[in-house]
Image 1 (cartoon, rainbow, N blue to C red):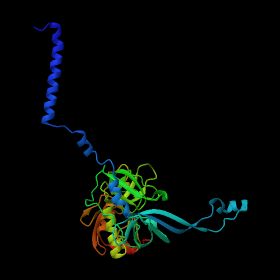
Image 2 (cartoon, one colour):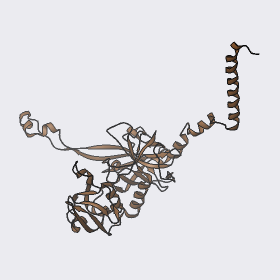
Image 3 (cartoon, rainbow, N blue to C red):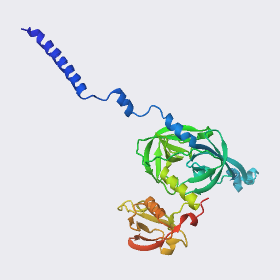
Image 4 (cartoon, helix red, strand yellow):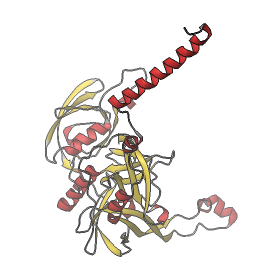
Length: 369
């Protein structure tokens, strides 16, 4: 018989043995996630394969344009000129050099970049990943999406394939490839911070990918690729109000612009000849929020003007689709064919309006350069 003073120790020892045995049996019956599996789920330790796939298609872009500068503001004041005796002096011109990047998207040398990279440029040179430098010609531009299509001289180009699935999820790994500060081809790593970003005032039609991958001056027009090295966006801008906030144009939207420019010379979009703001922004803070887009400006003699739309009108339905806000109206208007008659309903001073507007092609109604 076991002495009474040994019984507690023996009970603890038996419990430990039973627990270890049970754990061993459970491990055999239901293996847990081992270190190998954890490593597989954590993603690759290196993205060098993605970089090797993408970088041959990214080019550094160098442009020059002539800019006119005003004289020093202090001495342009006539009172100060009289007392100091320093004349204002004539306007002066200087040659400005612009850095950027581009993405070869077709083997015959078509390149996508940003409009602001080549705007007003005289000479454009593209430096390929293999060191070759070749002239580039502007085929067409689209100020409304801040995109431009270039054609580079030469042969044997490697086009960067677009991601087969254009969808992106917040948290996806992305790599930004560009020419920051003229250092040459540079790769930065980040994630997708958000999708469908608008109201950034960066362009008229906004559907940006937001990323924390570093996009610096000179990276504009470069490639945003996924972890497989496939093109998911064209880097467009960085926020000047915070760190780790960059924006890229989704690849599907960029390729649509490319196809339209190559086919038509410009992007074909329906347009009413008006500018808008969110109706909710114009409502009284004490009133119920209003869905729709408010007419802020009407082009004299344009389609909206001829149809009877007036500044201050609120558009709440365009065709058969309800309108949520300004961005919604812009998107639906642009997706409509020029020449189409569209029914527009809404309100004017609280009274209903119901009009028919014949759309025009925005690309021919307004200059793009």
